[in-house]
Image (tube, rainbow, N blue to C red):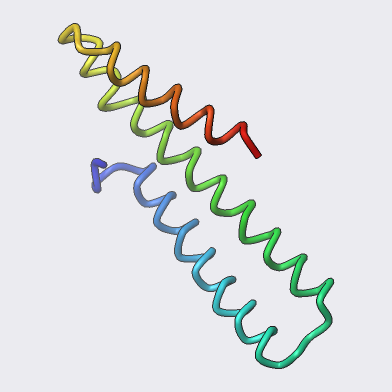
Length: 91
C-alpha cells in the first residue's frame, strides 16, 4: 500500500475507528449490557471493516493492478481480486 496516499489515510482512519468500536463492545460485554445493544455495535463495526476493505481494494486496483496491466502481468492481479470478491460475496 502506498502510505502517502489519501486512500491509505482513509483506510487507517476507518480501521482505527473500528478498533475503538471493538474496545467499546468489549466493555459492553464486560458490563453485561443488553445483548441487542451489543449486537448493534458489532454490526456497526462490521460495516466499518467492510468499508475499510473496499477502500483498500480500490487503492490496490488504482496502483498495483494498473501497474501489472501495463507490464502484461494483470491476469494474476485480476485472479487475486476475483478470489477476494468470491470471499466477500460468500456471506
